[in-house]
Length: 212
Image 1 (tube, rainbow, N blue to C red):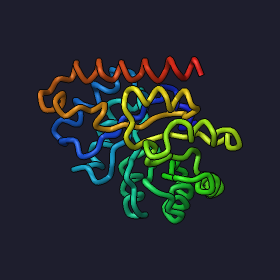
Image 2 (image 1 turned 45 degrees about the vertical axis):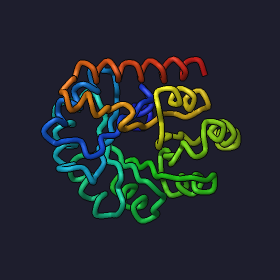
Image 3 (image 1 turned 90 degrees about the horizontal axis):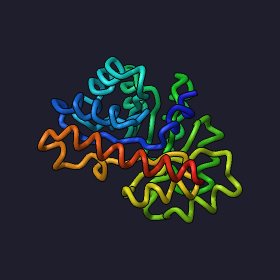
Image 4 (image 1 turned 30 degrees about the horizontal axis):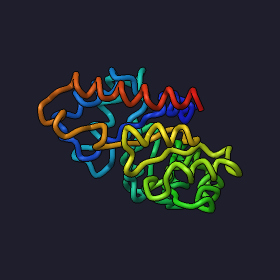
């Protein structure tokens, strides 16, 4: 299953508005660093091309999904580009139904237990808790009591330190953008540095997942 691979290495780097001409190098550094899934946000320049090229080059090593999917048109474009999962910032029932109809796993953004349950009833395979930093790891721990069957990916304000806390609290995966994809590394084309940074994140979340 896609979700099982998604949480195999429970870190989902989010490529948001990265320079298209550097996207291939960024993806390679992330994959070489150990990630098994990446999310490309649909408002990124040439997002569909980034998705398609990442799948063509690294499809045997990584899942490539589309994020910030705001409507059915975004979802259609993402799926046509080959996106293997869809992530939305909020629970949009029409978008969720469309993705399910197309047999593409969707991870809707939610903020409450009621939204979590609604998303799963609509056919979501996991949910995205967003913005996670407002609620914190304690919320994950508490909500996983009655809703232990729901895989939770947390995004929004995640740092290297808090990523481990969310995994320890019961999150299946964490999504992060600029905290991992540091502007200075990208600006200087330091792909080895990005690979090493990725390895640090993978180690942190994997150790805590095993320990938890």
